[in-house]
Image (tube, rainbow over all chains, first blue to last red; front, top):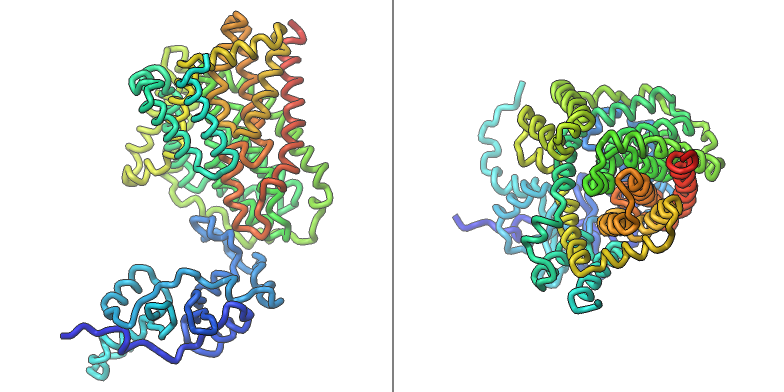
Length: 162
Length: 429
């Protein structure tokens, strides 16, 4: 079996944003579509970073929660102030304030098995597909890879749980 | 007398001190490299370092207490106590600030200050957040309290471990002599914070909903907690009782750590991860550098200089106290005290003070260095840990914002320490 490669399974019509875009507009993308991450690119399409759904959800929580090994003791999170939610609503935050500046990158020639390994090891929401010059070509997610590997079983009689 | 060896040793010391003050090079890397360099250059032999200069009593005590504190810390008991304080004060800001500061001071008398701050700091931020207050005042107060509380016992702060080992002072000696001034210093420091920041301490109109958290969730490992507290109790008892039988504090702490490790189910790797290796290696390097300073004769020269300043024992104590206060504040307490101890010993020998007459000098040194660490952000390891924590808040603490509160508080506390030294050891003799 020839190893399957990213170029045949990646999504190429990607929703992207610019570093200076308002974060509220990026957040709106997550509300209106099922994408898991938005690559941040410049005018030429060069990849700067990525904003994922979990990035953004983590960002509206108070940062100090990371200091607790265990957050079980908090019964009611509504008493916490989320500073960043206010800043988000006031349009004080831009895409570049939140983006992960070291997104996981793969090339079109990367095998799907390697992508699967990266996804299970580092748990990113998306892998960005870039060419040698760092230009964004597409993205690939666990959904795309699962479809490539397990698509052949579709319709073969998986019994839905009752 | 300034031959090649002395110049090299001084250069290495300057390198370490500059690394600490500028934070350009990590201080553990600087001290360890410097120590190794002096051995390779032949200023001091590895064997001399090993047998005469590396203070294994202090290293053993540090390692033992780090393991004990780490294992107890993991049981969640400290977070439980801090959150209980939040509940009992119902989030009245000023009262909570006092309660958390006092708890921190008491805990840091028995645990190392950094551990204490890492356990209580996040709870303080949580409480300040719920009260819609800025957390930095809490964090600064806790840091000042941790350094002050550490002054009270042999095991509270590494400088005291070093002094105890060098001067033969026991746990009991420390509690009786540095305990009272450290309580006074805490009162003065909190008093200063209240006066200086009275506007910020006004109620915000928000209260903490005591239903919003449940501190009992932190007490999940009752057996470990029970065993740890029993062992800690035995170790503290051992510190008081056993020196009379020639058992050193390091031995007591290491036995305690050994017992706790034996009865704990976790892997040794995990239990030993509580040992702060950077601090241990920092000391190894600095002991070698201090040894080299001694060997080339510089310690004796500076010791004679201090002894020549004044023949009056009270003034000599106060010189030591204030020199170490500023030394700790601006060079940082650990690099400063490690070198200052042999200098003080040399000065004491030069003045011909017997053990009884020398004791107040050692207490002055302890108070100077431990509380002096409050003066600036680089004053002690605990201050730097607090800065790291504050970076998770909307208003991170920086050198200037810390200095504005910490430095005046330190000066006031040291005026009180000076008065204590005078009244306790000199005024009525």
